[in-house]
Image (tube, rainbow, N blue to C red; front, top):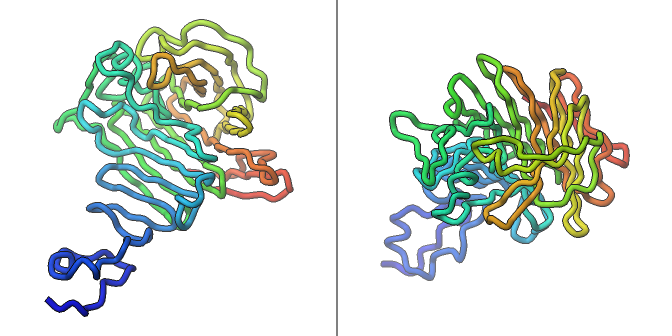
Length: 343
């Protein structure tokens, strides 16, 4: 084999012939970030798509994000269930910023404990939507250690858009609840994450849009009256202890703290239907772990909420968020604005 043949350019992935027939010293030290990976993965403009897994990651950083640990990233999961190890969490969201998962993915409670079946295996323990205090399929109302779908009745979302130039992804799922379509579009806008969630059903349901936050609530606007007691009796709701809640009109703003860091959630209804915001104390992936849980609740056949997740940055804090003509206008403290289309 000739040893003076040039290495494959760094801009493309070597095919198997090159890997087989050329000596190790001609192999590039590392593939560049702007490359495909695994079997079908894509990386572009700081964003990753794993279509077989059904996972998209959007990043504020355009280049080597490992050198920018304080930058913002968001992940949307929509893919196949994953057998008994899967969770009923279609269209779930994770948000990372400032070196921490502010909207975390908890993972599993210890195996063979009652919390595994009563919390981990239910939808309310994830950052997505729950209908009628009943988990998405295949869990439903069951407390099952290892719920799983089947080839004949799959629970699977579909990718609608992956737009790395706009740092945006959208997915839909119509198999989590009968007769209900869940749609979620997520966009990283500078250091912000804009979460656009729409639910469309054939008849009214009690709808809960759920977000878990790794921080301590330090401010709420409007103020919410105190509440006590478990939020429900089944599907993980019995493990959520209410702290406050009430009906809101207009955007609600919740501020959380972790040390010197701050996170604000701007919860914006894109229609005029009444909603309640409920704050509860929820579990994590440890029986001793507790974090705040935010639920936006309404009873309707449709729900359309957009949340701006703001890791608060000095000199770039958000002053106002308002829906206007199918768009969200974000106004910063310096008077500048950013307009984001919503679905």
